[in-house]
Amino acid sequence: MIRIALQAKGRLNEDSLKLMKEAGINFDDAKRKLLSKSNDFPIEVLYLRDDDIPQAVAAGVADIGFVGINEIEEKGADVKVIHKLGWGKCRISLAIPKTEEYSGIEYFNGKRIATSYPKILKKFCDENNIVAEVEEIAGSVEIAPAVGMADAIFDIVSSGSTLVSNGLKEVYTVMNSEAAVIANPNLTDEKQALLDQLLFRFESVERSKGQKYILLNIPNDNINDALSILPSMKSPTLLPLAQPGWSSIHAVVSQKLIWDKIEQLKKIGAEDILVLSLEMMVL
Ligand code: PRT
Ligand code: ZN
Image (cartoon, rainbow, N blue to C red; front, side, top):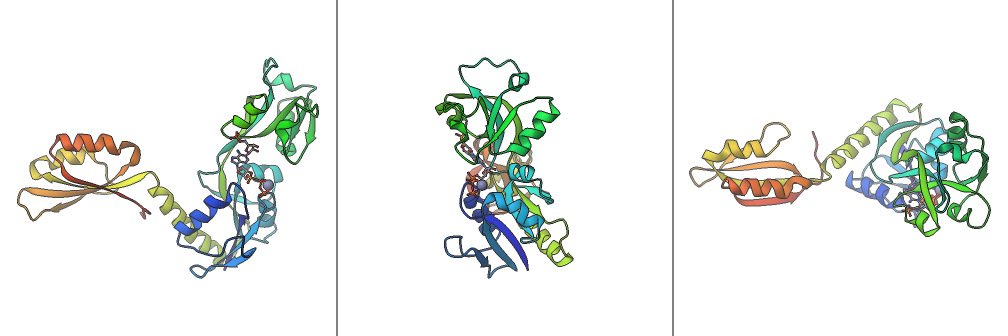
């Protein structure tokens, strides 16, 4: 049995549950139980606030967790970052009132900076020889300059629209973040084996994202042209059709390229083109 800590509610909750489900693991959500066991896999889910996940994993209260890299850095918890998940993407940036002129990071010398990430900010200031006053506040950081609590802020930005609507401009990105799988550094062999099994499933699901499965029929004379248009995982799947002189080709194509490939394939005589969604790619 392995225990995973997930965010109970908030920005990472939905994607966390979706990935577990796509990996074939179902359980009750946080609205029903704070600790929930799956019937599909030897795993228990512990729902926590994201701030508490790094510490819970470091202490072994949970064996693994999904949490933003920003929280891991801020908490300085002794956990291993095993796998980046590619969602929950954001950056932590310094921002100042939009009317201020910005010359470079020396601007922050002698300034008061409001943040919920004091450790990351202090480390950045130390590394860059900036002497600033760090004002730690738990939430609504963006409002601090307007109400006179600070001259600047250091906060999470994703689209940037919260900064704009508070009359601020982003001037320096200190770190980029995304959600990651973290693990306690001292997992037992049994737990490590379960984690490896989970990672294999997560990677199979992730690999299929943005990919489509394409099937088409092509005159045998044009098979080589079609194969040069279509990439393949190993060797392309090529099947003879009942109709003499024709074959069927199956391949996986990036969603971004699908229309381009369809147009090229039609030009060389491809017919009956089908495009299907992929749920996972197991290599
Ligand atoms: O209750 P709990 O403590 O669990 O949740 P929380 O309120 O502390 O965190 P939550 O759910 O807001 O965010 C969880 C994690 O999502 C963060 O630690 C980041 O790793 C990641 N993430 C990704 C974000 C954002 N994008 C984001 N845009 N976290 C917060 N924001 C906020 C930001 O603080 C700012 O207020 O959104 C606003 C900015 O958004 P834009 O799009 O206007 O720039
Ligand atoms: Zn939080």
